[in-house]
Image (tube, rainbow, N blue to C red; front, side, top):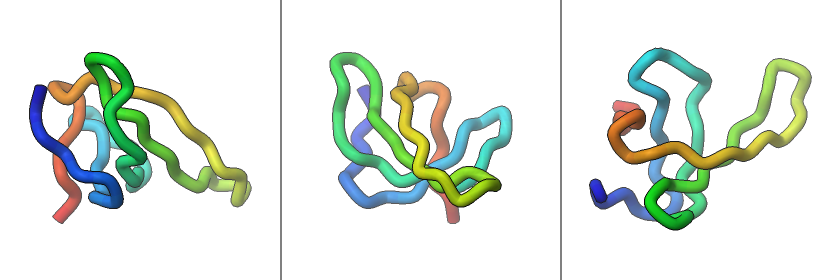
Length: 54
């Protein structure tokens, strides 16, 4: 599993809003972001789907 750290900003390789790493979630990484309506969202994605946002 790629090493991300809590608080790092990532996005999906396929494109997405900026998301913040919450921590590991099994073989994936839990992330959260604010959607277009200002609502907090969360999900988990495999490390292979994520890139650090620079």
